[in-house]
Length: 219
Image (cartoon, rainbow, N blue to C red; front, side):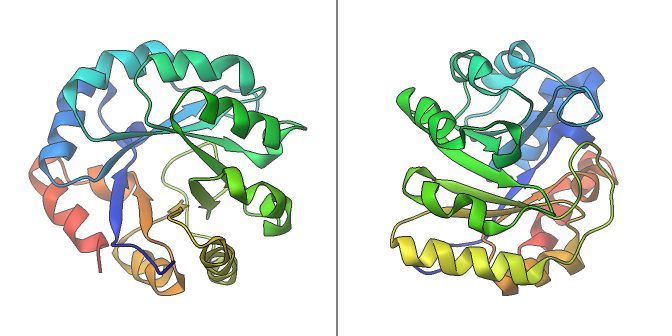
């Protein structure tokens, strides 16, 4: 497969939590392709965000793809609740447990798409044998846990992931998350990414600038 059209998934981690539904509607109207939802447990990563009830509460505010990134451990006990809340894609970290193959099987058994995420220090070799189960590969270009961090230039890793995906011969999203702005987005796209997560960059200037910021990430 060749690289897909570039799609943007604003991370609501950087939105105004006091009006979350309104923020989701605003990025939808501004041209977001996916809504990226960062779920953190204060254990696997050093931050605590939101659970399935929040996802359920914002689901009526957008028909766009809900791209749920579970930075939690263990993952498996939470899958069903996030499916029931309206997730379209559920991404789990290869580092979050000993059985990523089983976790991906469990996600797909609910009829949603399954993603696998890798922290900056985790080699791509760790997902080689689960690629047949994967609908999305997420390359983290920051250490997960907080928004607003600087981009780690793992462009060789993105390129290698592109080659792995192409070898599968089917549609798999290659997502990059962490420090994505107008400059780093171009680097990621050139390396083979086709789905970019951006939080701080999209939300930094207020709702009137969301569309311009999203547009500038497409290259």
